Length: 485
Image (cartoon, rainbow, N blue to C red; front, side, top):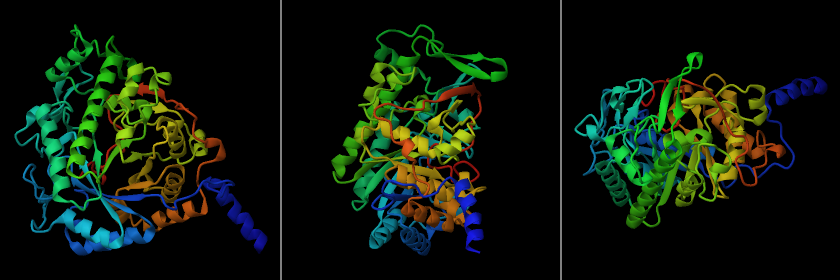
């Protein structure tokens, strides 16, 4: 009987690719584990103190250490009483009691349990295109990003109804002033808040921003007029069966460099402003993990000691100066891949296309283990917390456990987005099992996957461009089957 049982178990271990390995790194012990609470997806459920009590106790019992509470969804409304921004009191027909201090209650209860609370805010966005709702729709159309579409038109993002987020031009001065004041107000209002995690501190994508303001400011940076705008940045080209793709113009690389500098400058200023109110608060950020294509959204989240021009042909030698890892007290990144191990990926090198990507790509970046391996090489020793998108595992819940285990071991912690998915599909057992697997050293990085010594191994391979968006989310906020409910 013993022989039969062992023969049955052995194939299961081989198939999962998560057999215990020798010389495993230290698993989850002592690492932060963050559970995200999306603002709108959980709006009705978390409008009651007893629900908050229950779910905070639940995540604490499993091993989570932080609650990330979304308080500024993509509409630009906030979930607390503010003198600067409209308060969200209703969502999809449900009205919340305005006397209930949602964030204040979260902080008090979490601290009783020994959990930290970090407030999340979606930054360069101020409207929901699916509902024509938000600040851009309520008196601030000038904030809307202007996008250069594959048809050659430059239009407000509010006209792109296939995109749920009405993104803002990151250099629009009145919006920048507004959002910085919102950040300072929040920190002052909640002195016991442990930290902030900024989200969507980026451009919408490669198509943004092509406003007159952006042209003028870029020409100042460049030191000369752009004779053919936007074609000297890039031009759209029909490549037949491969679809319409962008072809870089003579100023393309400098444009990317300038956009990344704009984001860096904002992050540096935001940190300074927030710390002026509360020097002890943690200043954090979320981005997608797909660095090889993250230039499309104007973000360099790597260390400024890493020079991407040595690995990627889209980067100038100066692009590295916009690396902002050193500005952060906490950084979490979306390892939003269904392949967990390098072994998984090498068996199925399908093109991966994340939501911010115009093009798909291949490479070792596009699985959880490979992503963590490559991120190590560009962070110059700075810690990072690997994040997962739970709804990617609805059809394979066992892989939810595996990706939790991998992130806990291969990165410096875990971020789970979002609790609504776990509640809806009752995936608590799978989440708990992921913690147990990490503690046992299962489904961790292989010895051959040690981090690169200085550069980004496994760069992406561009695939055919398309004009559509892929499923999945780069930002926190895609918390149900409807993007950003």
